[in-house]
Image (cartoon, rainbow, N blue to C red; front, side, top):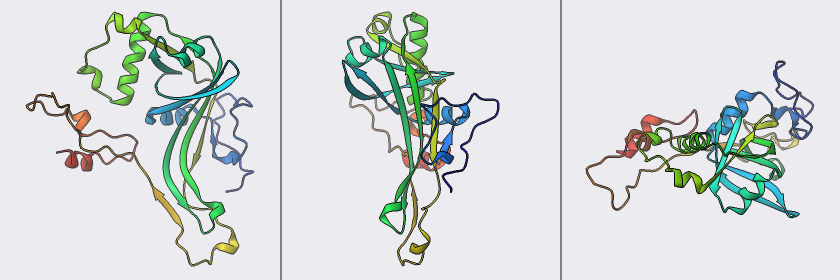
Length: 240
């Protein structure tokens, strides 16, 4: 695809800010909220980048999206979250790797991926009910259905947890799909070229050693999967 093609943007949505506009391979840029939200909802780990006392820091952490907000959490004493709570400018990224792209030349090898970049400042959540909602959302984001079984956090546990929210109003996605983009002079090379699809697949659940043997794993554990192409029937057979 030509690098001069225009990126995807719905007319009803605001133009992306200069910070999030995709410049390199601009046709892979997506700014519609549905694409951004779907990537955030499928991912498990985000990386949060910011500067603390002049030093760059990037931390991986669990998260959840609720509406137009991303929630982060950790211990009250967590130095990174404490710095973010002061309003330090931050960048949150999520990346899903969908495949390995093998070209005829080393130069054109690549990955198929979906990624999101969010710029903004985090805000500390102090309302106890919003805190509870955010922590529930994070558990549900990781394992949908789990909060119906797990004990909810106590007030003491909520006080020991710092929760931050960050708006996804300044965000963009970048997506690559398909096979290699080889140069015409390499097309006749007698080497295999194409792409190897990748997906996240859960293994058979392993019960805690103190778990009662008469309690089977719930369906959300037995059939766990992420992404639109998860073969849940196949996973269910493997988990039995």
